[in-house]
Length: 254
Picture 1: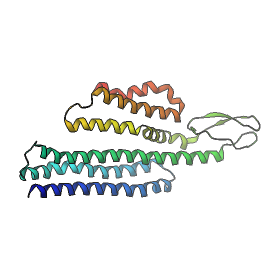
Picture 2 (picture 1 turned 90 degrees about the vertical axis):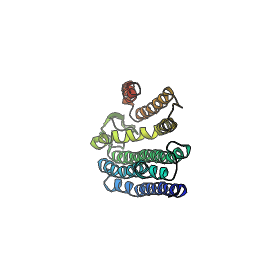
Picture 3 (picture 1 turned 180 degrees about the vertical axis):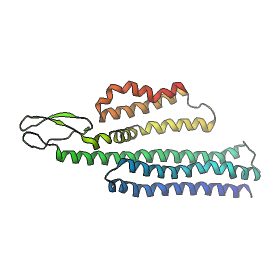
Picture 4 (picture 1 turned 60 degrees about the vertical axis):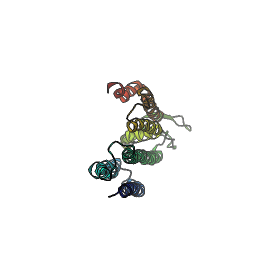
């Protein structure tokens, strides 16, 4: 097989992977939100369903490297392309770039679909709680705060009775699902930027971007994530330093 024929087959394979990957995400976008609502916003079912979809999409991504190693590399060598030559590396890098682009898209999509689910879940629970939260003295409806995951006191504007708001089991159970998802959404751009620079170092096999620069971007990701959590649940402010050190420990340990 000639170089052009091998190149065309390689390009065609990568195109099919991207098309199949997009199909998986489009089907997910249509089905997963429906499933979430049909199960009364049950987070475990939602997460398990996503894991199946994530595995399917990841398998497509992994197939790029596997196919290169098992078939394509040898095919190019048989077509007269020297291992390690500029021509060889250009074809190899097509696979690397496609894999990385799909990994970034998968991460972005995962964050988006969980953040969308979190927003729906928070609004649903808040609406439900708002129907039931009334003054114990005069039965007037009382407003529910946006960050309703913790108990708090609310004074009735009509009779001045101080009432205790209790979020209930469902609201407490969704705390970590919603807070993590919305934190990831807020910090996504920093995560993707960090991964992009790491990938460039990997692709060029040299330190284009120094460790200190990469670490600063990752720290910004963690900072943004944690501050979003505090915005939702102010009690997290007391553990900010501890959480920051825990989430960035690997930068110095490894």
